[in-house]
Image (cartoon, rainbow, N blue to C red; front, side, top):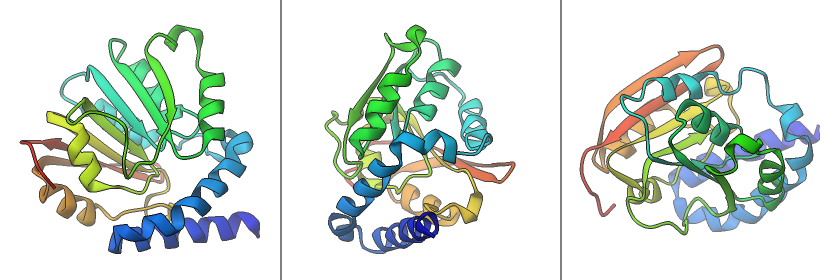
Length: 210
């Protein structure tokens, strides 16, 4: 029952923020509490295929990123996947819940510690310079499109992945992703599917003030 309510809340919060991003300030604290409470068991909740289409999107990148950001990193699985696929990349993972970040830091393999770091942060306003990442990745994450456009370097890429497709509690349809990203000078869209999941890859063509 509690898990079901949590999934419903995540879907409602996602839909509300997509319609009116200002509502994030009302749902941010309960979302933080929800995921903070799940941090210790998060890895047992995730299915074995939860990164299947995320990995497929990474594999579709035409060039390796030098610096990558994993937004809503949870306990770090996405950040580790990026770092392993691109062994020269510096990777930063951010999550709203401090407990998730603590778990991600604890789990970081020794061979990745010089390239992967984790920070607590709010995806709607992150403490990074404009155009400072070649890749900004999201797995099951509410998008903040203006912040994504600010952070991705010209010629860089954004990835959105949803492990359960349209059944994912936090889910955005591909047509909505395309529309919002196109308005911010992203193009070269690639949609991928695998297992239960879907993902979308897009390239930033030019700077945007959006």
